[in-house]
Length: 123
Image (tube, rainbow, N blue to C red; front, side, top):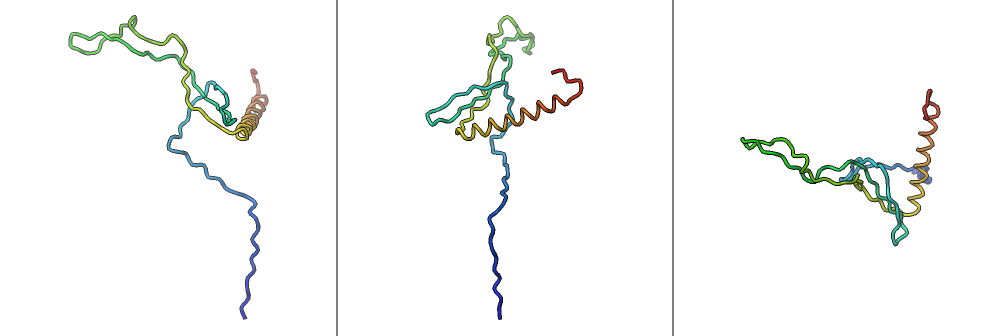
């Protein structure tokens, strides 16, 4: 006589997520952001980093041996403003934007709590 094994499947109680970096993954600094919306009611968030401008053009003297000499600083062409280089623009649904907002609030609270616990905190 054969006995039939009865297995009762239960619903999973947890799920795993693997994070895999995409081909264009990189780390970028955010000194600020610009925000807006699009026609799909998505939140559009563009992050930028600030820096002093690099020259658009420099001019150097040539030595009699045709080697590179000193720069003629008066002939340098440069921007007359601080550069805000937009690093990335993120488009997200309202629900994702709210989740990011909650995540940032949690991280900010954790940092502020840790800073208040430091001895001789100057803040």
